[in-house]
Amino acid sequence: MGRPKNFTRDAVLEKALPVFWRRGFADTSLQELEKTTGVNKSGLYAEFKDKEDLFVQSLRYYLERLEKQALLTAEPLGWNNIERFLKMEPSGLPGQKGCFAVNSMRECAILPPAAADAITRSRSKIKQLLAKNIEAERPKMNPDSLADLVLTFFTGLNMEHNLSLSRRSISRKIHDLMNTLRTL
Image (tube, rainbow, N blue to C red):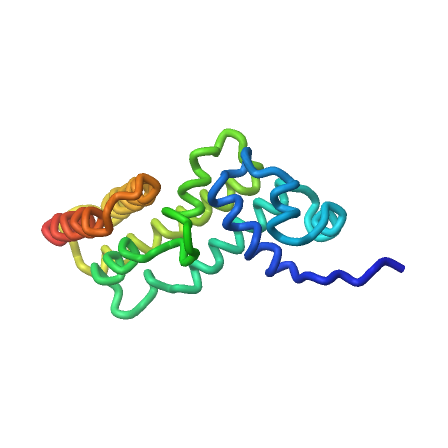
């Protein structure tokens, strides 16, 4: 009979997420994950198949937390939801910059297929929600095309968060985009 585990899956994900976020998938070592989570290698492997599985589960955990914010499903649908979505602080974690999923896209070529799939599904869902909010405003342009534009802007904006641009600069860019969208 093995020793009882002295950790929870969610607690490990909470602690592993910032490490993957800061260092990326490739540059995160198992030793660093052990140190950060306080769980030894055998404990991690008892809960997760391997480092890839821990990364994928961390990514899914992060995406589920974002989804629970329901920024793009608040009634009434429209530009205000999109603006709140663009202004949100996706990390919610001290010292983290940008969006974990967007940051992870930089490593797409080496990510586990399940991680790339989770990012792709999440982006597709976000695009659909953006399109519904845009459609509610009855724009002259195609809502799907505008949703693509907003999602691309969101990606670039989150990459710029990594450059430590001023909050003011980022707010100005969001303001300018929203003014433009409202005219389309």
